[in-house]
Image (cartoon, rainbow, N blue to C red; front, side, top):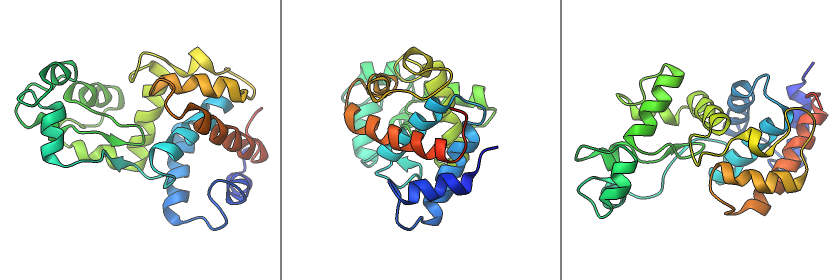
Length: 203
């Protein structure tokens, strides 16, 4: 049986210590819940990805920038109409409305609609729901499991049972963002993997 107390004891001595904030605990709990029954290595990499993408807070975040920036970057009338089209942004204001949110940045009307259909949550009507930790964690799991972000999936790089090597975690960065910061995130994943093992997650 998994022991979240032993898991938290382990992360308290490492990545999130020496004192865990309520936000860190609630964020980890949301991710562990969303990753229930997932392979050990997938869970460790989800935790590591969230740790990196949220500047170690374990809380879903808004993409940096304001409405003017989002208009330029993602709006059909902005500076990059081809990018807007690829994101499914068809209406003026979609760039700001569907800017990046979450543990991994869910961006664009098309991706909000995909997540809505998969999770049964109206993220198109209420995009701010992507900032709720339980929903953000589910988006991260489904997106990384099914290849929403780059076409690459957990199963392309990480084992379905047992621990993963640091090298495997380095390659798994391609699920989200090429090889950007791959080494550092891989090191985080190994630490989270060790904490999960300490907590009794199946090796």
